[in-house]
Amino acid sequence: MSAASFISMAGIVAFSQNGYAGSVYLMGWTGGYVLLAMLLAPYLRKFGKYTVPDFVGDRYNETARLVAVVCALVVSFVYVAGQMAGVGVVFQRFLGVDRTWGVVIGMTIVFFYAVLGGMKGITWTQVAQYSVLIVAYIIPAVAISLQLAGNPLPQIGFGQILGELDGLQRDLGIEAYTEAFTQTSMLNMILITAALMFGTAGLPHVIVRFYTARSVRAARYSALWALFFISLLYTTAPAVGAFSKFNVLNTIPGTAVDSTPTWFNSWRDVGLIEVNDLNGNGIIDVAGGLGPGTELIINNDIVVLATPEIAGLPAPIVGLVAAGGLAAALSTASGLLLVISSSVANDIYWKRINPRATDKQQLTVGRIAMAAAILVAGYLGINPPGFVAEVVALAFGLAAASFFPILFLGIFWKKATAWGAAAGMSVGIVFTLGYQLWTLPAFLGNEPIWDIPATGVGTIGMILNLLTIFIVSQFTPAPSELMQKVVEDVRYPGRSELVLAHAEGHLDEYAQEHHLGDPSGEDRRDGH
Picture 1 (cartoon, rainbow, N blue to C red):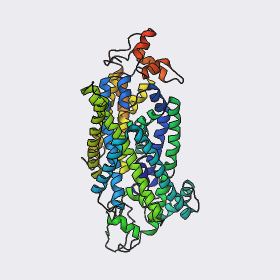
Picture 2 (cartoon, helix red, strand yellow; picture 1 turned 90 degrees about the horizontal axis):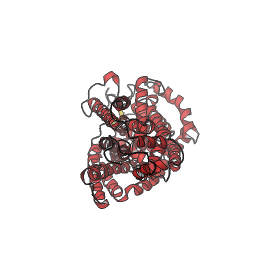
Picture 3 (cartoon, rainbow, N blue to C red; picture 1 turned 60 degrees about the vertical axis):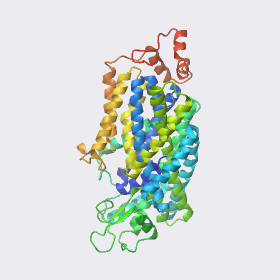
Picture 4 (cartoon, helix red, strand yellow; picture 1 turned 180 degrees about the vertical axis):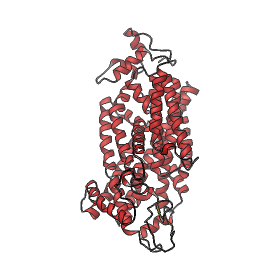
């Protein structure tokens, strides 16, 4: 659960769009874990490789691995920028510093425990941080649900409050909260939801978690439990968004500009709420809606953090929510930095530059890479191209366009070739990243083609990736017969001596013992 889920999702559902349009984040990120649990996690665990580039290098070849490393670095840097931006928002409000110093403080914290902890340390750190963030998320939601709807279950209180919120928005001259397709088309709803779903299933730092499970069976249960714990937050988020918007619209519109509540002034003082008295009457008017160009602009990333204050809850709960926001951002940032450092140390330094490197040398290179990555992530966090959830959604689109097709076809189509995989990833990542840079206001800021947003173009990139793999695989050398047999065996439940030999690095010996021929193929020059 990242900063996008904890800090930003409820806000982007409630304020930047109406609730219906914002539901793409809820459906996409939850549905992605279903895809991961059903289509990828157990098979990748059985295959026995510990990172996405490792899987790609072994299933395809070293050229494909190098392309996968580049894709992993691009996805991870975009994703970690969103996390550092979230850290900056928390510290900006609760330490009273500006965004730059807030991000610098977060960078320092992440550096120490990510560099010193490693895979196992980060895994257990994330367990502790999830415990904090889910408690911090649910307690205010329960309290506000009781306060507004008289029901302690936010998911039920949410349903009761929707009708009132729709009526309140209409009375204020704003479109109804639940009205469909007012701010986005049906096509874009499908494209964004799909990009988030397939991107979730292809995220390198999520997939690597399943290798900490002890067995294939444990990986399946891990995915099931992950979905349960994720659903606790994702079914609560729309309730938090609706409750916050209801409270804001009940108290702020019609208030004098110089008579706003204390919580409002606290966030306004640090620049995360803006008031523009456009008509000069001294009153906050929201008839034109909320957001840029209107009289009231509320940063989406403050909604969850400000919810306890808006509802008048005690100070300890306000502090607990701030701790939850930090836990979400820092835990995900550490996992992403681990992907970056392992890609540089293992897949670039050891595989390409110094094959004789010792474990100590690889560890040193990994730590240097992590330190450099933190500096880059810090810069992107200080200058983010959008709200936390928007930045993270871009990373999901890149993951969908680059990784999901080669993982899915690598398991379920034994004749997918190395050159097909390398070409597919290249086409998907270049097209998607290029379109994002072309349309985002923080970069070139051009008008979207056919009104397709940067957050939804990953679906088109994924389709292009799939088509490229299929076409190129028809004209390039097929994987070795032995690798095709490994792929077949991976898909079937139960113990496979062939897959076990592959996972333990004894494929050559197994092939000779069972007279299965040379495991090397024309497209497998690493000789594994």
